[in-house]
Each structure stands twice: as C-alpha cells, then as structure tokens.
Image 1: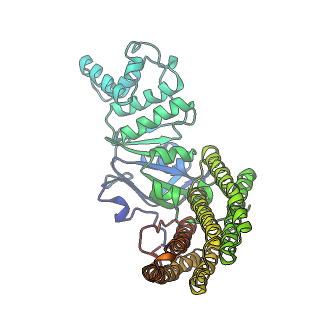
Image 2: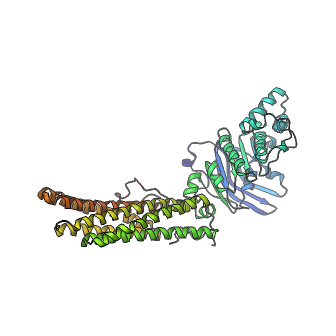
Length: 268
Length: 238
C-alpha cells in the first residue's frame, strides 16, 4: 500500500496551478484544538470537496483561507496558508481585499434585506463603483453566471427575501462573483435545498469551476462525488487523504476514508 | 469472509443485504458447480437420466441470475454504495453473468452427452482425456468460488494462471480429435460432439478466469481484465 500523501502529488495535480495551499495549519479555539497540522493543496479552477465527520475541522479550515477565523475571539491560527503562492497571514495583507478574492457561501442563504439587484451590486458599490450603467451590466453578468438571471430578470427590484431558498443561494453566489473573486469557499451550501434546487446548484458549482476555484464542504457524499474533481477526507483536525474524486469513491487508500464514505463504524 | 468489513456498516440493514448478496452468489456458484459435475458424470457414463437432471435444473440457474441482478439493482438504487461496497456490487453483477454462462455450457455438455449415448462406442482414450479435462475445470470452478468466499485475491491470481493448464489439455484433445476425424470419417459426428464438449470445458475455464479477475477487482480495486496478468508471473502493481 502506498503511503498516503495528503498534499497533492505532482501526478495528481497534472500541471495545475495551486489556488490555495495549507501547510501544518493548526487552529485552537480558546485552547481547544480544531485543526492539528493540516496539509492541503487546492488546484486552480477545479472543484475540491472537503468531507469528514462533524467536528473534524472542515469549517475551521475553510475559515483559514479567508481569515474569517480572525473574527473569532480566542482563536489562534498557526502554520502556513497561501493564496496563489502568497502568504495569506503576512503583515500588510488587507482583509477586505483577501475576502473579495476569497468569497464565501454559507449553509443558510444569507441575502441582505435589499432588492435582488442591490444584493448583487452591494460589493461593487462598496468597492467604489459609481457608474449606474456599469453596475447594471455587472449585476446582469453575475446573475447570469449564477444561473439565476432568467428567473429574476423581471423582479430585480423585488426583495431578495421573497426568492426561494435555492434562488437565494444562487443569489449569494452572484453577489460573491460580482466582485470577481479567485476562490469560492462553500460551507454545506446545498444542505438547506430541496433535491431539484440542489441539482441546479450543483450544476452551477461545476460551471463555476471554469472560472473560479471552488472548495466546498459537504456532508452529502453523493454530492461530493457529483461535483468535485478532487476530494479530501478530514478526521480529527487533519486531512488524512486527498485524491481524485473517482479514486476516493471507488478505491480509497485508507481504511479510515473507506469507513467514512461507506458508512462503516470503526467499533461496529 | 469479512476481509472487506462487509458487516461493519452503521446500517445493520445494509450489512444484512450485503451478507445475503454474497450468500446468494455462493449458492448460485454451488448450483452451477453441481450442474457441471452432473453433466460430466452424464458424459463419462453416457447417462441420459443425469443429462435430463442438468437440463431440468438450468431454469434454477437462470432464476438465480435474475434474482441476484435484481438485488444488485436494489442496492445501487437505495444505498448508492461506494468504495469496496460499490466494487462488490459491480463484481457480483459481472460474476453472476459468468456463472450463468457456465451453467449454459454445462447444459450444452449434458445435451451432447445424451446424444453421444446413442452413437457408436468411442475409444476410451478420448473420453478419458475429456474426463481429465473435466476434472481440472471442475477443480478450477470450485477453487475460484472458494477465492470469492474467502475474498482471497492471492489465490484468485493463482487460479487465474492455472487456466493455462486447461488450455493445454484442450489443444491436445482437439489435435487428437482432428487426427481421428481425418483417419475415420464415419466417426466425425461423434468426434465433433466430443470436440464441442471440450470446447465448452475450455470456455468454462475462461469464465473462471473472469470470475478470478472480479475477485481481484473487488478486494484490490484493480481492474486486471485485458492486462495479460494471466500470462505474466509478476504480481499486479498496487
């Protein structure tokens, strides 16, 4: 049996550039260890899924990449986190800029209590864009890219809260991509959606990878199998195995990975 | 039996389903083994009654194939198995198709045995050679099913390579029968029937090889079909 290599091997990477990489990342919340030396590479313009049992550190790891952990009191992050080769934790990194480049989508859709178009324009205006015409164009482009335009083109002025959950989640994506990020982090983005909305959302995730790098946390194994090019398995605050998704789901190298994705209990 | 940890799912129901699936495959394997054994006895003793037994039981083999296939479909639809569970279901689907074909070959041998019973006596040396080949093929089938029962990919590889011995016997017997046909034209019909029997046995040997490949696939996750593994002497790469 090969020794598992949690970081991407050159063979796996296939010449792809790395969008994100973590080396020896340790995260503590008030002394409680959440990440215990994580190594992970996320190739550019691909979908990478993070799977693993609750409490294994998936969300903590996501939050390292856009430094959302900085907002949590008593949270300490150590190790190396890089965005396109640059140290995300270096002095002088501007957080608003980092978070524009690394967008995030949460489990519960979180549209602002504004109109559909104002939601998408929000980040653009924040970035200082004033031209009404240009804002309209970019709102439309983002809504189209989020596969939502056809459904909302006639109700751009309506409240975003009137949209269905599936539409709201795509609106949140549109809001994130309007500011032209490099990476989209998604934390169980489809777990609140019905099966049809979920499939639509998954279609979108796959399409997004043509332009963006997607790192998605999911508890739904079939979802990881459907959308991800690469899948990383985490347990106990570490990435134990990462491989092409088809390899993980047909012939994982580690017993731990196999147990998890096939629903086996170690003690059973 | 539990090298794949089939009984360790959190869902007890899934454990039960997979255990039942492997049990059914082994039961079907046992049935096919019995079909081959009876067909070979019918051939050795030109016993029409035994031939009739084989032909009558062929329906049970076909029914087993359909039942196991349906069970696999159910598991795929309801459980969406992954990793070793997925490989098990895929391997079983392929294995039952091969077992069913082995059943067909056994039936063919039984029918030929019935026909041969009515023809002029055949030189014992041919029947002896055919019986020898039959014994080897029976042993291959039994041993192959055993590798599945034990999930033993090392033995499966050994079995897979032993198919060469069947091929050697087949070629020898075929050459003998061709010579006989050239020499004594009145014996051509009977010699041809013997040749069809030998051909069926050789095909069963090939089917056993397919079964072994599936055992290796489900244990190791390596698809060794069309890799020339049977010919090489080195173990497959991990």
